[in-house]
Length: 308
Image 1 (cartoon, helix red, strand yellow):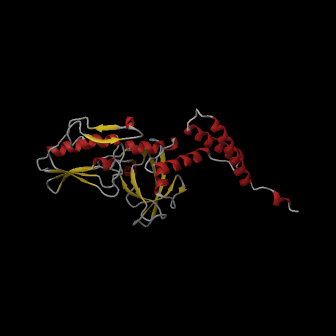
Image 2: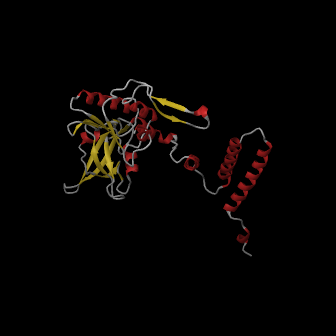
Image 3: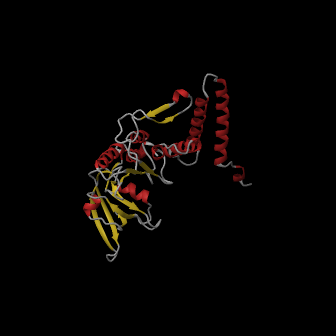
């Protein structure tokens, strides 16, 4: 007789162990009338996780599995709430301050899976100083071929501590498809929240706000103050198209540039009236009398919607 026919599958043993453990834990939990549902459920989760670590046939990446569980929970409760683990601290800093260590260039993937290109080196940035040009296809980073990588992976590899060197190989089109090699020293890059403002169509004071970072209000105030001095300006245009949002407090302060002080902008409410928070403008406005037009599109979200 083949003894393997009677050997239980590893997955079955784990399922039985988990089932028994959960039943036992639930029975114990029922006797603890002083413990909340939250505590009991956390105990169940901890027990399940311990069983997996002890009995699953392969090792489990603890950080990855916990982050996956957190992401699944948030997606069910509120898909717009995001959790940033410590490993993503740089991304969070980039989102809130628009500062990062890198080469200072917009990159793009015109044809998905067919290479990432330099789209626009920022003026005065390490990429511009080194001689990178729009259209250069990134072939290799530190001798690792990246032609099949996507923009997020390439972007992550280009970033790093300011002062560190980066070896980059690109293919330059319209120049015999030649390969060019660059050694670039990363710098602290500061992206402007207001990359452009000025007078358009003779009478419109135009302000393009791309993100609500911790410097957004200061830059919008500066642009608005300059435009207010121009006698040609008869109305303002605040362009929030493509702006995915950012810091809530910045949205409130930017609204405060156009409306009277102490104007209520919004309320946030959690569970119960005690968790309600009212946001009002706190500073004197720059201009409340000139007509204002706000431009939005399908990509305008979060703080952009509040401001609009």
